[in-house]
Image (cartoon, rainbow, N blue to C red; front, side, top):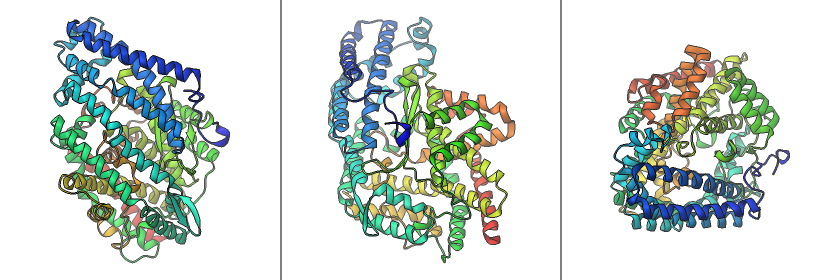
Length: 590
């Protein structure tokens, strides 16, 4: 795969499953697994320093080689869910790694019992930047199961939540949607929501709902099964709820989430006003029909080629930071990105860091809209975050969910605010402001509806197996609470639970509020940039660098922000409320 056909180049990892380097790394992984099991048996007899030293050595090796193997297989599968070799390899890798679960449980308990982490670091047995990791292992120990239970759970998960997740991915990427007499993929029909022709948007919306109805019961079965597994695991581990587990994994206080959500709830009426104003512009009475949520407004309906998207983004990023600009240029020129939708390719967009190469790989379903350019900016923000975290040692590169959306959303704000500032034509300015509000509405209203829906599913699952109709009922109820009278009552999207992969993870619940967090946190950081100028850039990189080695709240303190203070979140929301007023005034003029 090369930049010429606009698919990504995975040769930085391997040239295929028959590549000798792939087999060599499989052998290395086998050796690392054996070494980890051996260390677990010897752990009780080792001094704290010797234990930590040996654990770091073998864990770094395992992280490197298993990461390369799994990333390669997963990227292959994401680009083509019909790639049975990739699916088979992922299953085999998960099975291999599951054999380490008991050893990991033993070692985590032993590491949690290390009496003096500072003394171990001073002795040189562990680098300074592993302090947070070692302390986190101590903190996590109280939620750990017995060694045998951890091993059993890891093995059962392969044919449990992980398999159900694969089913949702496979069904949604391969289902054929009957659209205007032809058959297209679900991602392709969803992309038509951005089409300038209102009849195309409406027909695509109706075709999407009809197509979803052909797989809804199977996907509902998958979602029920995944959520039941999560509830069972939380009970066994001693978490109060899946949300409590999510916050623990996120290294985030409940006070921070409560401050964020309560501020969002207070500002929902502003977004309802925006939606009604957009509806009026498009000739609707009352609320906006779902199929017009992403309707382009004004004169920003230009279609971008890949090269035009590159030049546009690099022109903006160059004014902020040369390192960011150069990374984005490399991503386009060196085939980091798989651009176009096609049958079998998963929908949506994502970034995947490749630590062994110091690069990233990005999947999008690009069709040239301005929204797609913003999506590229978003995913390449993740890539820039990857770049900062790769400066850490291998075991200190993973950051938590909330801060994971910081750099991506900052890129969005940077691009959109630059475009709005530079726009001289009133219609163009209206279009750009609307595009930004469209995205903001997603991270406020839509994310809030997703949060409410997932909370509702977890609430009902212990007593109820929810069929597709029930899932859709809960989804529509959540949309009513989040969108209010901003949406037309009879034209919402009952299948949003089916098309969003974020719900289908056994290990990552509530992957919704981090988007709202990231969006508003990024706006706060952008305000700081506007305030202090170039001095902000190294501060920003330091903050991104710190995300994997401290809590969410401590990370924000680098920028002088208290995340438990509701006023911080309201300040970011107020900037959006002000934009809504500008939009409404411009809409009246136009």
